[in-house]
Image 1 (cartoon, one colour):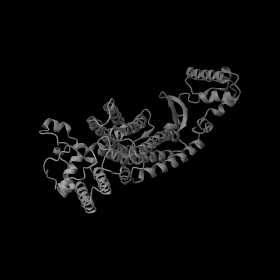
Image 2: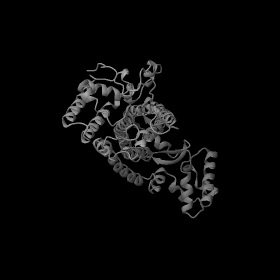
Image 3: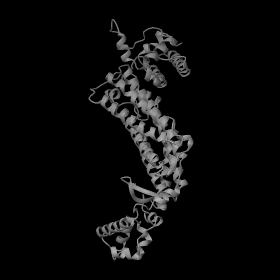
Image 4: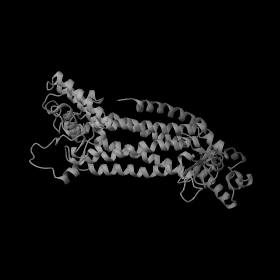
Length: 475
């Protein structure tokens, strides 16, 4: 059934010759758009139904047309029918397949009232909407792994950093949940993107619609487009902002993964020793037997650049294209196909790495108060005693300088040293010079106190449940 039954070009009526072999090779897209085949067949079923509704197919013809499409779909699924380089694109290949099964008299009727322009714009939306849910589910898996880390280490303190310098102590759970929040926004972007993309261009034709009395709204409903059909046929065939927006969301996911990856790489060094990677999610060296390399994290960093490149390349392609359809738009698919493929490979491995991390709580706790990270607590304690913050900031800074002169930490300053720095520094200042007190004092919404983190964790779980419901829903 996969033999080529001749030239089935969809556009050659006014041409006496051609195309040249060089043009055919340049023009071919079936090698990458074949993944749209199931969506093309679904669109063809919906189109056959509106042709019947418009009186252009009899009841018997519709029945035989749908049966032929069912057989074609089965042959595509099991690999007995495939596109070839001679087919140019997925649409041409499937028309050839339908003609082979139904003959030209019936099979040739399906092309009426539609164009490859409105077909591909619709199929592309369908494909990306399905893969948005796949990626959304994989993000949820990662978030659940991060939530699991937070729940398993509710009281572990670590040094919070700005500029990669010691800043203030935070809970490890609080730090991990910051990454969950970032991924929640990415998941929300996917849901919002999906709502905007749930509009069907089918029925727009090449650019001006059809004169055959077809029903684009019926096609939209048949194909699961909740937003109905395109309000403007030119925009329906020419718009690719849904592709660019999808590429942005996938790039943003890559960037956020890369930020987590960079921390894992740093934490896994001997100097930090905050975490240990599981053997199943790390690799060794071909020459140094002691090595345990964070390859998944490093590949995440590398692939984030690839995802950003897919976005920027796509935007460059779309720039300055006049309405309506232009062949440049053949270049819109490979970048986002690649972005889907990369994330769908990367996210499961990345989630496995995070879910199996061993956290060195003693090492984190040891470094949590280091680097004078409690200096802000001194300043804020002074403010609570009525000292203006400008003065309190200067006094805390003097405490740090005194510690640096003697090579000690803030809690090692004597009562006499505190008093010499400022009369405001009474012995009671020691009540804030411990990590547990510093953490507990930051109990406002979004803070790092155990009570605030517990609230955040409950909210994250509620959001994650809604995200999972959307990702698992079938269109």
